[in-house]
Image (cartoon, rainbow, N blue to C red; front, side, top):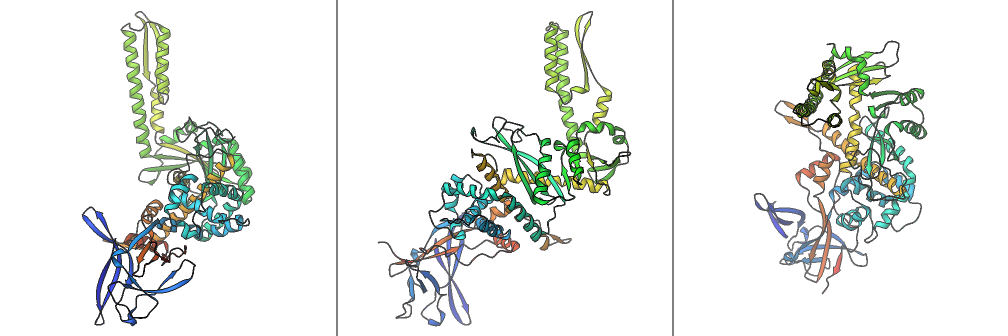
Length: 605
């Protein structure tokens, strides 16, 4: 790392500008990357001093210095002149800055700093609990990890101590755990606050609510947590105890509320609890609920109707049999090249059913059926041959072998008529395909059924609303992948719930970033050969990854009189980073002045 002079002639005068540069290894060979522009280190002309630099001494007193390279003679008798040993300039204390800075800006745009200051900063503490809460949420957004990992690895490598104003050595896992205890009681107020901020920032509305559930498992026995139970694991970890998380979002993915349930709680049994919870927090309103068939029951739909609500839900496939005639008709409406829908009204009923058929889904289900059918037919032929050749003569063993074949192929077992019959040559296996069952299976492949008590919308509109359920699924994907809500390491119920709350805060920052990027991309047109189109928005993870390479560091300038001037600065952003910051409406600070030890201190001998 070194200082590079850049010479320029301007107005008949020679100027020298200095940059802090490092050598990096690239695919095309060694390259030089500019970390920071220091400006002019001028000659002896007093009218062309370098910018005045404000530094602090070890007692916190400020001082203005004018910097000169050591090989240039400065004006005599000026106590504010510092001659820099250019060949000994170095960079120290590099810290991750960009992603943390973005996370903090999102935190402030949601006014979460004000919310937690009012909620948890009443009690005096070495570090305000609102800042520790910000640290936990930003970690969940940028580099999710346990409290121990935050203390030992992540936090010391970031510039959050400067950004949040936290003194060195004040963050440890105990303080992080205690912060979880402080923020958990404010869950309901937090949800209301976020709902208002989403409305103010993005005009988000919550008339249509998408409801879905997922699970997350715990590492360890969790004997003191009664919520942890074994149940249906969506994480494919039936060996671990788990808890169920219910999430409600609007059609744009903004979170409305969430709830936690015991790990063995059935999806269908959660709806009544969620309805009461929403009414308690937000009052009664004519909301539209959208959820999949795993939550559908007559009792749940009746509970929504009783509250004056409306619904658009998936239905079990068993109900599709009564619409067999409609499936075979040709009066479908094509809403997309691969999607067809039709509206089916029930005589003297208040509900409408929507049949949907997707070509891609049809091909997938047909391929699955053919694969299982081929496997089952191969096994039946092998058993039939074994019996015919007399290698298997015990009827009980035949039945057991046949039962195992049927058990291995449950999805196509109903398509075959199979029987063991006594003949003149002994017991023989006979099987054949049920033509009517196969015809019905082929007609329903790729089709699914929706059910609603909405009356005015067309089949296309209803299908589009149901497809918004993918926003809830996307929310869970973000929670589980980008925000790493699983696995759980906490063993106590309140700490587990607080962990979910921190993940909820991380998702609040994530979805805010997502919509800021989308809005900015829609506002910035990109010229093309055929005209002008909107730019493709960054994904939240791509934006965070890009800014994670923007560090802050201390530039150490040794002087000829034995001192060291430390300037805490942010390195020069790349063109892509500048473009992203401009899209988000963010301006980097010129300097970081948090720690006063970044100052003019006597050199250590």
